[in-house]
Image (cartoon, rainbow, N blue to C red):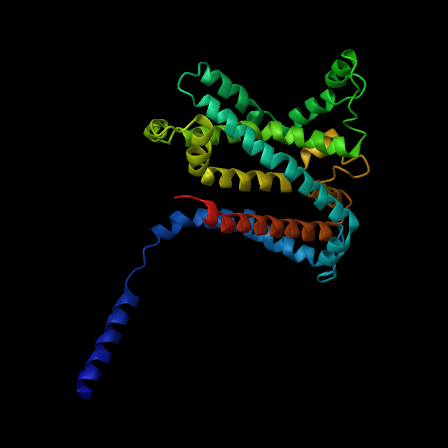
Length: 307
């Protein structure tokens, strides 16, 4: 038995030596090397350096001063940060539910068999998705102008009171929400339309035979089969709202009284003020919020999503 064990050990050593002596192919590693080089240069290193900066007080020039978790505690105790968080939450409540409902209803109308001009209507709805955010924000700023804006001029001509889009805090939030809603509804409609076209018409024919009306069919068949699309669009639009910056910056400049200062604009103000340490900390806090919201949506989706 001892000799057998010795022979097996010797054979294993020889096999290992043979494997070590083989030439390792280099080509596969060269094929995947560009990805790791790009990933390290444009993602891994910037993230690691941002973590390092978030633990220091730094204005972008000169030496850094170690503060540890001071930047994080400062941001979480800052009243302006929580004001921006509140504004972002209000915009989420304004944009996400209404945007999902409107996009779904538009997609249902476009998906009708007898609907003519579907391609033209779809292009019109998709235009906001391809127009620059800066351009659309500036156009809405002109529309909201209290003196020469087309909206208030039309309301005044009809004898109706003008709306203080840019001077009232509540109306300013609504104004920013409408801009974001206009920008996102076209792409959401496209996703819903694609999902609707994958639902077999036989299901609707069977529901019609069973006496199901349009409203009952919509709630019992269409909505349950689109739950995963609704979840996807909710997550994507939530991430967009959490990073909302250009619209409040260009339309209201964060005013009045910081009523439209979102988390994205708060982060910009930190960078513009050369407080890069706090800005880096805020960016990671925002990333944590995004991860928490996304995980919560996916976890809760298990209870109401259908296969």
